[in-house]
Length: 116
Length: 109
Image (tube, rainbow over all chains, first blue to last red):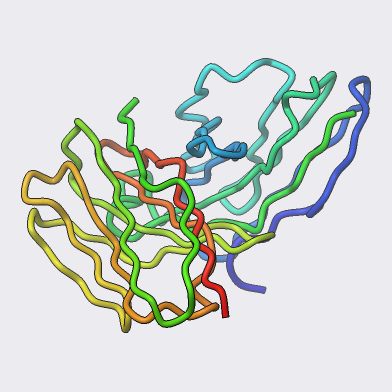
C-alpha cells in the first residue's frame, strides 16, 4: 500500500475515553506531521517528527500525546478530550524536514473526530 | 507564525465559467504551494511556485506567484464539476509550511 494511511477514518469518543489515531506511510519519508483542521480555520500544526524524534510541539494541550516509534508510523494518543477538540486530524509526511516547501506534503485522508 | 489570507472564502459558479482565488500575506515566502482537498480526503498538492513572478499552468489551472513572493493566485478556466473542492495555499519558509484557511469552490453542472 502506498501513500499515507490513517485509521480510523471516523471516531466518536466520550470525554473520559482514551483512544489512539494511527498514521502509516510507505513513501520512505523521514518527516511526519500532525495537523488539526477545523471549519473556516487554517490547518493548525500540532507536532513535527524528524527521523522519529519530535522537533516541534506547537503548544498542544497534554491531553494529546504523540508517539513515533519509527519513521513510518505516527500515533496520536487521546485522553480526556473536550468537545472543542472535535475536528479532522490530518497526518502528513515529507521527504525531509526542510523539503516540504519544494516537494510538498503527502497527506492522509484524516480521522474525523467527534467528542461527545 | 506566518499568516496567509485566502479570498473569497466561498465561490459557487456554473460549469464553463472562469474563477480566480487569491492568497495574500504580509510575509515573504521562499515558495508557495496550492493544494486541493475533496470532501472526506486529505489535501493533495497541485503545484509549487518558487520564483517571484512565476506562472505555471496545469491543464485549465494557472498559478501565479507575486513578484514580491507575498501573494499568489489560482485561475481556473472553463470550470468543471470535478474542480469542486477546498483550495488551500501554503507558504514555505523555514522547515514547515503555513496554510491558509482555504477557498471552497463549488462548480454546478
